Length: 467
Image 1 (cartoon, rainbow, N blue to C red):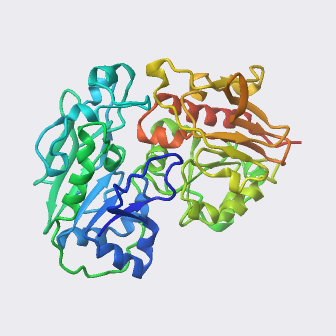
Image 2 (image 1 turned 60 degrees about the vertical axis):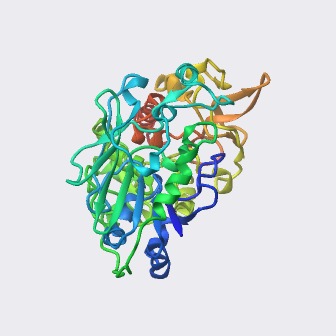
Image 3 (image 1 turned 180 degrees about the vertical axis):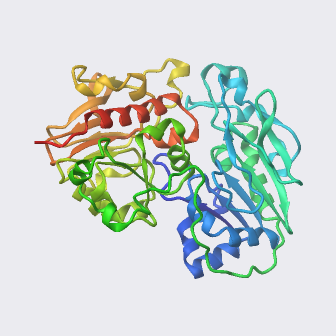
């Protein structure tokens, strides 16, 4: 039995990456349940998706480490912010300037990569068909496989894949007790198994490797306390005393706080944690609202509520009443970012799925994005590139909302990609299907970082009590 710990609902339109049914998806928050945790730790092998809550995993570090020490095998995907298994190294962003800076190279053999031409890992494209490497150099996007590296590896670690001209450690493995940890520092490794390329063997190789562990029984222990995450500020909406956390926004300004209090609702994933720790965002004093632990009442004390993209729907549901209450406060701004199924909980909002076009800047393809209302004051803070890199479907807002970025299909507008609504509720509401926190925190797609910076500049410069 191979189990994959996931962070919630997969991205809409994403291909099934449970690899031909051999890997079963399990909600990572099941680790908090004794019976479910026992089942997880009884698996032959584990895959940890890149979208899992790292704070949660940190609570279960002893259990996950014990699984490996007893002979289990684990694939860790994504960018490790704080190690949650003994021996894990922290991921570091590579400052890359071109495709060759993120080209993967084999450093040492590993059975998971047996039979793979590493050139087939370099580029991805949504252009239909199977393409030569030379063609992919023209139409493909590099960096999906990896865009960072690891230092301070365990003493017995073997570097499997290097990145860039210096072959910096991207993928590595190391023994731990009787088991083995395999780390892939990029988008989920199993998603790269493509029938059109040599990577078709990646899925079977991975399953065979995960099933190859020989395990002893694991002693179950209670989950430990939440560890502080390096780089995040301790003064957060989740940890502030209740009296301050529920302080009305107007009272906060009267107490001498000129800048708006901005809270980022998040689920402890690596993009959110890296965004909160980004020194470039320090002037905005983003307050961490970690959904599993925070009190929804904390939102009452914020001037700006940012609902981070790609949240775990179960964790978000507990905060929906507080978000809707914030929309009734005329002194607040609420920003809701992409892939949060807003049509299920924001009043009167419709949604239409569209596939994500992430390769248009390589092919010159028109992805249909159009900017509207050039006279709107929002454009004083946003550049065209910050609002046109890609999206995750179309929104259909209520009448009166201002759609500033839209999708045009067959010469007609078919939906909104970013809109501002100041008429259908007392608060100011901005909603978009773009996902800037995910991409900024992942160190990928400069337009996404521009959008995040623009949102923060806009809301800081324009937020004020209404008379």
